[in-house]
Image: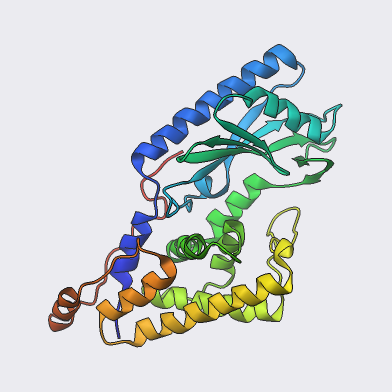
Length: 312
């Protein structure tokens, strides 16, 4: 059997955003906060924006895509019941960042600030209701209850080092295939929901997780958000074409993953894994594979801590 655990650990590291890009993200994030705060002081002084990081960047499972792109979610929150609609609050945040980069987009659930060919920063906008519950502003719709901080806490409580890495591998698969793929949020939840007992073999753990995803989603096309609004995060993908294509891709991945684990060389295994995870997964030369087998190298390495040395 081709043990590829150490190669998966290398792949996990290679999926991380670079230090230079992380520095730029931090710099642009702080500039956006200053710009938004100053705009509201001048134009809407009765509203004081506060900020927190949410999403994959906060949970440390953000990946750099194969196009060398990444993203960050910077939540803008107003700790008060507004006397305007959530869409108006979004519009005001959009006005604050308009012209800051080459493109800003008013999406349904956030304002996106795009930094060309590098990364984007999403600005979801929240406000409190009368019960001091956090409400997410949605364009041209009523705001809905949302608990982004509790979701980050849920992930931190539920994830293991192994399931954390699995979430990044699933995202990398989605990034490599791209069409008819689930969202990073769905993969994050599934990495935990379909996790099994840790076996210190990421190749086998990923296969087990994929089998769990196949079984559970075939039975019920439902991935519940574990915090408010407790919605089905794959409901938007609930159409026959998407589901058929997704399950075809998933079955191909499971078949090749099983073959990779059972095959007699890491060279062959690496080609099978790269087919689904992309070129960033290391290609093992025949000579290296033969040398590992000759010397009985089990390809075991010590996993890095889940935060990979990054801090917020």
